[in-house]
Length: 423
Ligand code: HAM
Image (cartoon, rainbow, N blue to C red):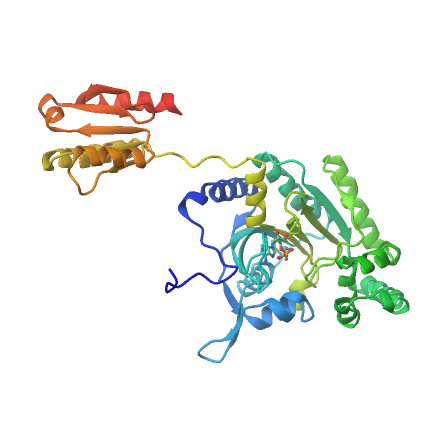
């Protein structure tokens, strides 16, 4: 072991036994997204660094210190994607998909951030998310929030909490920013090092500081609601009215500012108290200014991304992961002639939709049966000399050891019956 190469810290292998819950989540999410009219998009994992710097923001933690950035052999400055939104906007613009068009897309895949690894926080992690373009109304904000809520419902998940806030427009944020800076300047002695650093570059982020003294100070900090322009106020009001209409409960968290600079107006997060410090399972919001910032005509947009590792951990804690589907059949075949029959039988069963492995190598009956038991299949189909002579097959129910002899002609029908009863 000591000499063998290990995976990179914070980047996890996903082993066969652990993937059933991932597939359950991926399939359920894909179906919910389809029901809302969203179509899948798949994009490169590597993009030009400039794309992320321009969209997520130079002074964000992600761009400042968390990206995996390198120069490729041509000298181009590239980064592993730390999130999906920037790439989707880049692709929409590159392929001209936003000309007078509404787009609704979803994506899933690995993202990379060089954060300090801990439970629920990894350097390679996975997101599944959606982005929608061409709709400026609050109805869209509520549509995407209701997609997440529908997904929780389909997964059987309850007890997750929705927090919402508004960040207004760039102009209203500017006035708010000045008010915040003034407030923090007047209370500099309560700010920790991190907050002092943010005071110049990104004062809004001080609002979600985890430092006790700063949390106390934030209780009396100015609220953005008082600095909002009328349109943003109405927009936020409408979001809340529609959420109420859909009976989606939420709380307004005036400190919710999100860690990416492209947001304006509605932002939201779904959190849980079951996962310790890494409590956000999903985050998103509106980003009406980003398309223009990346070189397009102005196009309103909104989206969210779910942290898959965190959601899966929560599904496990809540015992909502369905067990991995068991294999149906293991074929024990003790001679070359039996093997030939076994091969064609296996195909016949697979054609009928059953999962089958045939024994490979090793002709001893005893060790093959051991392998059959270890395979966790439901049934073993045994083809020995006796069976070949009588044109029959021995069916062994591996859970309780019951054995029965079935004629070759009735095999598929009889076995199907047994397997159906075992579901
Ligand atoms: P985000 O809040 O940075 O937003 O990430 C979304 C979710 O990804 C988080 O709520 C969390 O569950 C998960 N996540 C983030 N970092 C890690 C990590 N290091 N390890 C494990 N999970 C993590 C975005 O990325 C935006 N692009 C979301 C969005 C889409 N907004 C509009 N459209």
